[in-house]
Length: 283
Image (cartoon, rainbow, N blue to C red; front, top):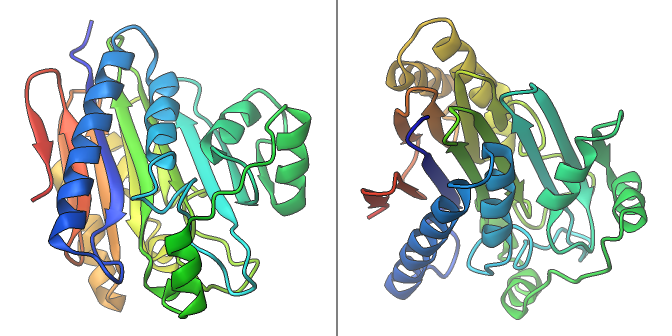
């Protein structure tokens, strides 16, 4: 048996209008969620736990995923989410899905079908067929930001990586987008650049999706750890490569030995980790 560990993030603390009060609220929310997810993983798998933790993040309107997602240029909210099971090596996700409460749950349901990544109307139709009812994720704050064209400031993806008691890893990532983007824009969150796990390592990313895709961040880190680099060295080498184009990204990572690491190229990503004894929350 392994010592379970969880690390999660709530995007970057860099959205317009952030205050010391908002910082404290996010610290408290992440601490609460990571502890609650730890209690869950004690009798659940890593895969089940990343979905559970990400749902808690999606349901908290402090974060840009699920409820409280950013609004796109045409006034609609389109969300993306993915999960990856380090045991089965299966990846599933939804891209630009609308009007569902928890996109990560739809991604989870896709693990059991042949076509495991769906976008747009196909993702919505699948969700409805699976019993996911209409739900508006818009909040008054996001509408105000949209009306004043401040939505482009959002950098708030959420994500989670879990090592369960059986030594298995899984990763999940969910986002409401960057705000005021062109409809049809695809983020990194439902790609292997933004979310990836195998039996050795799991990574979830946040930041500017285009930069994360250009840097192939998550899959590079996991591949390097699999090939023998330490978790820290793999993260640092991958983020050093982002400097060539001033890539804006953050990542949380966890390996099979229980090593945790977090890194960002611009200050500052909000995150929390917990192993049953030590709680670490961004400062």
